[in-house]
Length: 73
Image (cartoon, rainbow, N blue to C red; front, side):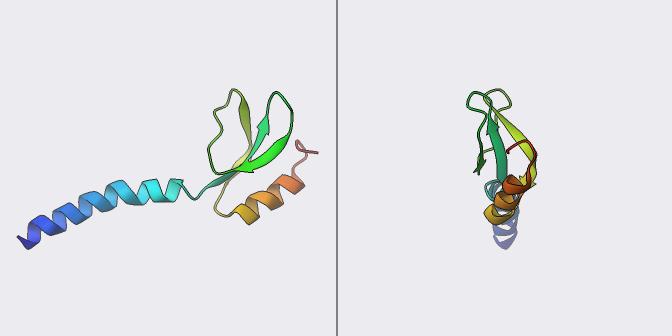
């Protein structure tokens, strides 16, 4: 019985941990129509919005990158 709980817990951890980690990333994105930049927690699609730089772990880091970005001035 304990082994079944352990296996179930491991399977859940493999599914939940990557999903939770992906939800915490922030991106500096540029809207291709309006040419304006912003910070989003959704990964850009590459057609209507483009990612500027990389993914950031905190919104504060993404805000700093937005202000420093040459493409967003």
